Image (spheres, helix red, strand yellow):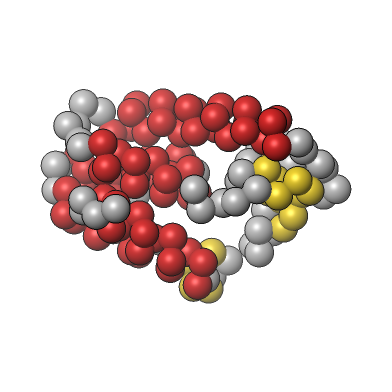
Length: 132
């Protein structure tokens, strides 16, 4: 888990209000959340991300570690952006090394490269290619 837990809404650095374990939908400045409610929202958000990904990727066979890396990335960037990406096009073509490598390109937010995203993408890439 890369998001960590925050009980009070905060700006993610590019103007998106975020709370709990990375939830952004319907979050307003000053909102607060309990750890239990944040976990419920995380699980719902993760389920929705996985469903959206399955719909846009289609019946492409993947190892669990590949799927986990892709879901982590899509949870962070949003399923809409993920489904329109070169990464997903590579997955559909079963170009797994190419798809995993695409993760490393998603390190920018608000027009600038963010060290936290670089670190996250490196971890997702390692997971995607079979590392831990």
